Length: 182
Image 1: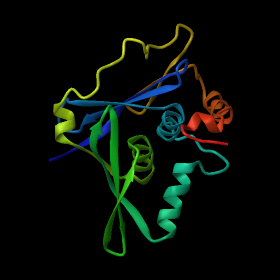
Image 2: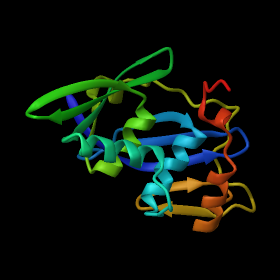
Image 3: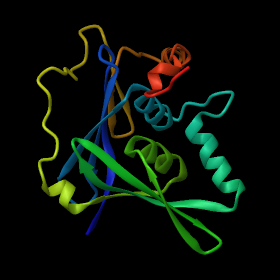
Image 4: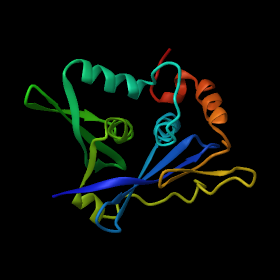
């Protein structure tokens, strides 16, 4: 069974460049915590803060391409977890046909927020304790960091203004996005 969720918390450990997105069921109190990359956390935060940029970010571009091709994102479903890695599916509609595409949950969430699409999680993922927090990661705000709120989400990082966030995005390297090989 699918359960609708929303982003209720977003955190970034800027020292380790690891993000944490917390999804909460819309009609309950169960939570699903998923570790994500720094770049994806920033992309989600950028949208939640309604910050605009001169040129489209990747997730904005993908939404525009999808619309330009006559399609739309119907919903996102986080489908499973294997060896602490979560999987998601984008359900796109075009010409009355539903197309499912495999995607990372972090990208799926960023797209769903931009497309105003619903986010769902398989209920068994909410029922199971599928992710134990590592004692090595500290997601508490740094002493000199401001806790910034994005809608109902919190984003703990040393960013105090939209300009700081924009500068942080500018400083990202291709390697910050994961398996990029120059």
